[in-house]
Length: 243
Ligand SMILES: Nc1ncnc2c1ncn2[C@@H]1O[C@H](COP(=O)(O)OP(=O)(O)OP(=O)(O)O)[C@@H](O)[C@H]1O
Image (tube, rainbow, N blue to C red; front, side):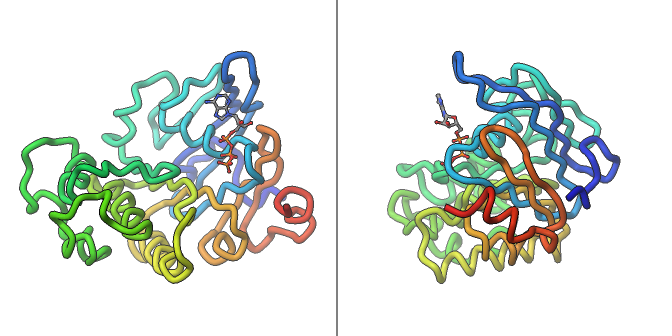
């Protein structure tokens, strides 16, 4: 079960340890440990409501931990402001994408750059190589794009600062199967060819198996199983993932 190193090992780009989080009186995360190996595509899995999004938000500094650590490279993140993550090299694609519908594609990408009056030259060319549709629709409003195009925009926005870790929360929610395949191809390319480390919340097993090198399963606010993706057994699937 523990084919991946324990949290805190040197080869881990991200290591969460002993994370506890409350919403008011409700104890939501219970002593969660999560390690993301450098170069891995780690899939965070589990049924609805087990705490996956909450854990990602805690990593991103959008929700405060009651206790625990979040180490990224050599930096401790817990208790430090959310905006620091982007500067240190973490890109984040939130659940539901959260693009700005009134802003153009270009303006949405510029939000990722963290500047106001930039021209198109300042959005790195490789974003448009990955997502040609974004160049084509550069001046279209974000709200006028299809779900799949909005997801490409959200991923593009997370990549503009050239992160070393990309965190995605259910990138395939509400997206047509052919676009799911395309987004999967792009994540695989980024991970395997460009060496980007990926942490991905994914509910669908075939997608997770296709992309993932490692998995972590959560159940009721705890991390209950972890390992290399090819060691994800039917028993774990039955016990924690089957609906
Ligand atoms: N703002 C909130 N206030 C109180 N409880 C919340 C809040 N957001 C989430 N919860 C609760 O925290 C628990 C974990 O939710 P979370 O969204 O992290 O789960 P998840 O595994 O990401 O689920 P899903 O796959 O449905 O997104 C759930 O019981 C949920 O009802």
